[in-house]
Length: 392
Image (tube, rainbow, N blue to C red):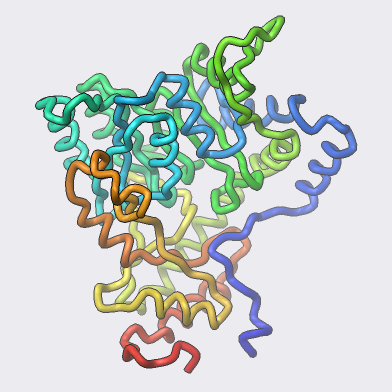
């Protein structure tokens, strides 16, 4: 079979059928594209699924993070601890409140915030008070690639030092830590419905919480600052972070498929693990036994002498998409010059920035697709000489 005739295996592909199309068509036919009952229904379903009292739907996962911090008055002079290895939206949401993201190195096995590194940071910023006027107020762990962070330890540190705990659960719908659902550990948790996530509404996000006053505050802030009560008084200087009815209609249909989506993702991950065992230079992701992962992404680590760029380029010639896992944020230009945001070294995040590799995983894949990924990864020959051509 020629390369051209082979279907392209994407990193992720939304799992839609006719139900999503019909749901969107109904919204279009109604003429009510915003502020109707579908957003409320999506919120109700999502709160039930996450085990929380309230869900507030917004326009993106980044908007969810931003609103939670605004609702808690995070701003200039405040610091928020975030993992260094993640998508930049986590740090950006902090910085755009006027606060400072302070980076924490990550664990090489889970890619998540390293608890010992976090403890050292807290000791420096809270215990010794030697960082000037910057005040650490919040810890924001990320459940990277759907693999839960060590929430038991992180929650204990937050409680011991009276720090706010907000989960960036953008990737983690359906994941669990010691049988406890992700999204239930902090005062609020934020999810994303970007196409790379387990369920998607195109763009979209949610905040879940058990705090009724916080939920009301978030609803006001997402809608220009108008309170959701008779008369709709302006109670804050808000933003337009509302979710549309079209997005909510997609979300409702996706929620109904969530158990099957999670089952299929787990099956594909098991097959990937099986077939990639022969690729000795690729360290497969292995969740610790106490963590139940939703397999939002399949990200492993390549050996130090393997050229990741050549691997990605070769796979692309074979119609297989691959990319780096995530980013060490302290290395990005926008943060590299911001020395106040750097309070340590980040060797693991730096290593993962250079050596993590994400491979295709989504509910539409079958065993033949997985076998093909494994075959081409083996054929990518990491021992290429520098002048060899990936097209060979």
